[in-house]
Picture (cartoon, rainbow, N blue to C red):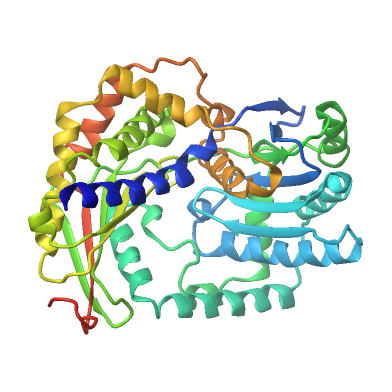
Length: 437
């Protein structure tokens, strides 16, 4: 039973690791325009597809008086974006997306290679936009408020917000990117225009192009639309405060879940400032996902199969979250104790050099993917650019890189050798049929 349990856990945890983290390391190159704008090219397998991203290092952490301005701005621009796309009769099949984060605002376009000129024209129009009608802003605000109100009806969303507040109690990283309903209603078109004028500058802007484009020709297209003006503004990213030593426990009973869900958060302090620490941590986590298969949880304590998932966005948020689901409500503390004990044991014993090399190779040795599968990769790159404003933070490991195992184990022990900062437990109000209370 223990063998089957460990194998099932390994498959669940490791498949998430591959999908969530490995894809970000791809061969890429960067060019700088004279006005300070960066252009990143991401290599892909042979395809006639094209994906273009405009990433601006401006998000909710740049807000001063009113929360939610960056988010409202991104949605106003997205509306303008879609209107222009329809008006320019770009090839059928074009898709677009946009979002604002803590440190960046991102605008996507996906289509065919022949759309490059049209994509750049529309992105440039978005970037250069200087005024917005009160009607557009008010319509967008109404939509944002509806989204906030809907999110506040989700118990899982509420408990995650409480976790962030506990982890970042002195920082804007603990607040909502969207803001509050009452706060958003106070945002004016002047607020939106001022934020864009102040923070949407060429030194904060990065164009990411994924597709089989001729780099020289593509640079000419980008320069034609983006290289005519130059603007600059200082980028001041927040330092993430260390957390207190005690563990914050948040428990919520909900009729929106059928089985207990456990979220455990660890702080990854200020990794945005040190890409070497971030790489070491990611190698360690890749190795940890393998090591956990050997003796994850005592089958007698778990009493049933459980499932893992995790996310590490140290370059954006500065935290690691592990989510555990278990069918039983009467062994939650045993599950938490067993998982934490195993993680601390792995952290104390460390990773052998040969295993660190394997993990490092796994992170860089994934084959190129077609443009159709690049959205997640570009999302990770744009987040890193937004948080770090540094191309070095998105470059891949060298295939023959022998990363210092001492640094890998140091980061693993530093993060996982201690208890998590926050443990959230969402309990079902009414246990599912056949599930123990």
